[in-house]
Length: 586
Ligand code: SF4
Image 1 (cartoon, rainbow, N blue to C red):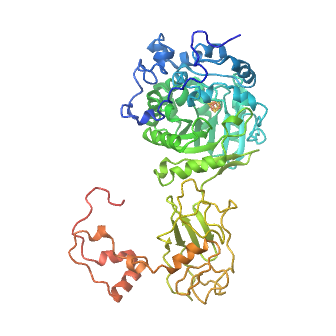
Image 2: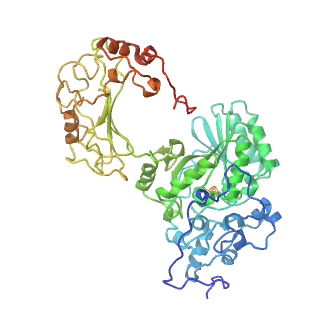
Image 3: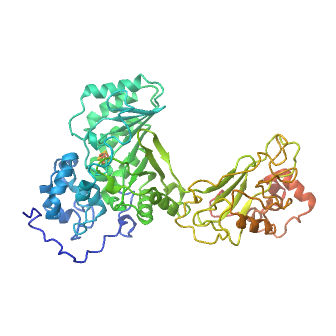
């Protein structure tokens, strides 16, 4: 029996798919300003004229009053396959599998969130997040019920106390939408959390002075009525040692109508209060969502985004970059990019770690650091969040105070730590460091392995900066180059075997931790003008801009400059002209 929606034509097998919708609606010139009010009633969540998505397509007969009413949205969530089939095509052969997975984890999609789905794209990134798919059944038995061990670290039901100074407080078990990859799907039974349980959670925090920060989560705390949520918040705020209240919510994404003035007025009574939102895809940054975030920001609530890296949804540099840029325009800080947890039924969403590294690599240096989330893996069994990043510190010799760094273009730079303060025996200034192998300073694809590659030219994109073994190149050699306690690592007698210090005076080419030919080329490079500290002092073009003469550099003036450090600039002739762009410092 074909249970597919009778009113909808299916794409014939082999028919070309329509092109996917642009991923960054917020980037389009016609998008609503992020700081403006929510879209006016009737505008819908996307282009109302679109035949493929939008309120006008899915809910043409719903009044503006209903559409803007979050309770109407909540009541009219799509919770069954039959109801879904009145909106989206469900292939007949997938009904069985999709019904099976609903036995494990319920479905819920607000009309608003449904309206973001492109009906003609079976791989639509919004659809994949909330519509049960046959592939979910394929891996139904794979994964854990409680992959993060939240219940192992639970002193009272609803509380997870894993970190010393903060706790997670799960106060609800329902959400506006049910995300198919949810880590906490085991708790979504949509019953009311009894008051006695809520009180026990509050009581635990009150009895635990070490707790200074609570994450109020669920389910979704913002699904509570404003009065009920205020009851809970007021009890928390009455705890003297509790400094910070954070709320985790997907409501601004899936039910932005809920963020009304009444809620914002209530929330701002309980500062310092932060909200972590959960946008995964730039198409979720609709005018309604932007309006919701704007109202929260105006209530003084800092917003941070916690996205989950999901295969087939947002697993590309372009998508995450568009998401982060859109969030920044909405004054939402991209905070975390989570590796998808190995929760049961979510195997088809999981990506290799290399995908996350590739995305961060594609962001770092290519956009502001503020727009780059921290990529984290929540360690299984309760290990907590572990930040994972591409390797930019390629070599670090702590004993010698030397590091080799890779920048976002793949160029290598040498960096020296400050000379020890008690190093009276070695007054020689530290090397300034600088770029390694100016003409060829590219990191090999796998990073500079120990004693490794002879050619180092090549593009870096995609490189994790790790060596062939996937770890930092090892450091060998004696602890100190001259054996004198407290001696600066770059001073003293000729280097011992394996010493990696890059002194041209010594002519040593040993660099066990760095690609040898790269390092040889670096040592053969004559010192560049301006590479020494004495050349740099007093040379700011800004300070001297417009000056007709400069103080000639003499040995005496150089010494004075070194001794005086940056203050030497003040001894130079008064600047004739200063930057006039209004940015005095940067
Ligand atoms: S909104 Fe959050 S808690 Fe609710 S289903 Fe989605 S991921 Fe899970």
